[in-house]
Image 1 (cartoon, one colour):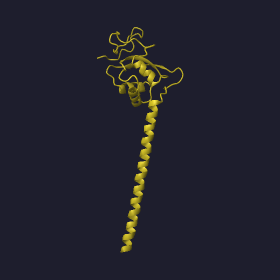
Image 2 (cartoon, one colour):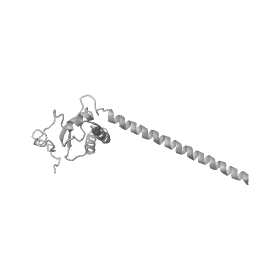
Image 3 (cartoon, helix red, strand yellow):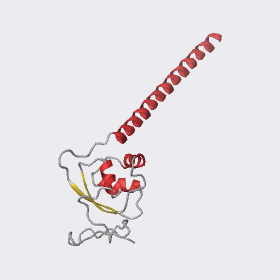
Image 4 (tube, helix red, strand yellow):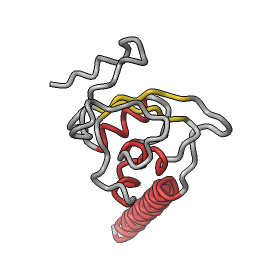
Length: 158
C-alpha cells in the first residue's frame, strides 16, 4: 500500500511541476509581448515618418468644430495621412501644438510628418491652405467655396 501512495505522489509532483513550468512560460511570453508592443508604440511616437516619400499626394481634410484629437487622428488615418490615430494623440500631447488644433478645411500631403500636419491644423503654417470662414473667429469650419465651385460644403456646421 505504501508503494502505491509513493507512485501517486510522484505523479502529482511531476504534474504540478509541469503546470508551474507552463505558467512561467506563459508569463515570460506575455512580458515579451507587452514589452515589444510598448517599444513599437514608443518608436512610432518619436520616429516621425511620412506615409509617402517624394512629392506625395495632396488630400483635402475637413475637421469639424468640436472634434477631439482622437477623432482628428481617425480622419487622418482614414485619409491615409498617418498610420495610427492613438499615436497621433500622444504626438499631439507631446508637441508644441497641444490643444491648438482647429476646425476647418485643410490641404495636407502624404509626405508630411505628423508635426508638419499639426502646424497646419493649428494654423501656425497657413501657406497654401484654403481661407477659413469669414476670418473673424479663426475657428470656423465653413470653407470658402468661391475657388472650389461649391465643393466641400458638407461639413455641417451646426
